[in-house]
Image 1 (cartoon, rainbow, N blue to C red):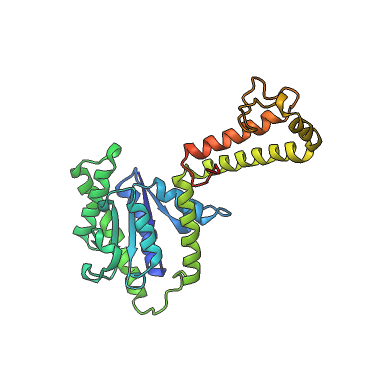
Image 2 (image 1 turned 45 degrees about the vertical axis):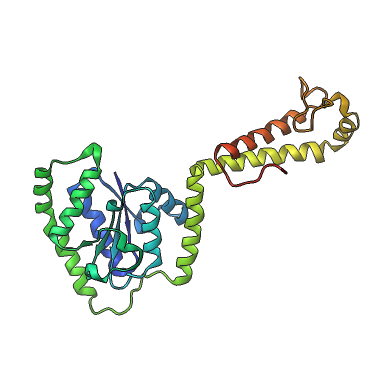
Length: 281
């Protein structure tokens, strides 16, 4: 089961990294996704994040006093909540109390960073991992063994960061808005069939435009002759797109290429409910 871990700011980032490293030691079949290191060099953040959000079954959001109003956290929490139960959208409060939470995050069950609350969170993740659920007794023993390690690391991060006023890694407002815009576009693509489908749409458009150029530019002289004597190429009740003849390529070799590429493109748009107008009426 994939778990999306979201952060914003230096403290949040370091806590998220600790959780990412620690989580598979307790729930071995859990695969955490953590943006700073899980994105390969050269890939676009928007594409990767959209894909990971779409394939994750739970989300952990590291909330601190510095990022409690982060639009980035709110956006990612909202995106993942559209496909999973609210109980699996898990804000973890670092240096905060539940009374400090406001806005969209209040709809989710927050987890204090303390032993009993965090154990409840791990239990919820374990239950959601249907195909690889640990028995409660086993989970209890494993959690008791490894909790002190995580607690010590996170407490140390909080202690060292308590005197810091500036959060070096907090995303700027401009970068945040640009990233959210890119991610919004990427999520829209995901809903229409994903990035592979997006490439397929580009291929179909390319095929149609190439065929159109062949008919109405490269081979225009022959096209003119065919149109002037259209009764041999188009049935009297037909149209250019639906000529109503048995052999659409008879003495007009490029026409089937154009008609077939057009029909494939239209069929793809309709099949995937893409918001593109395809007819005049």
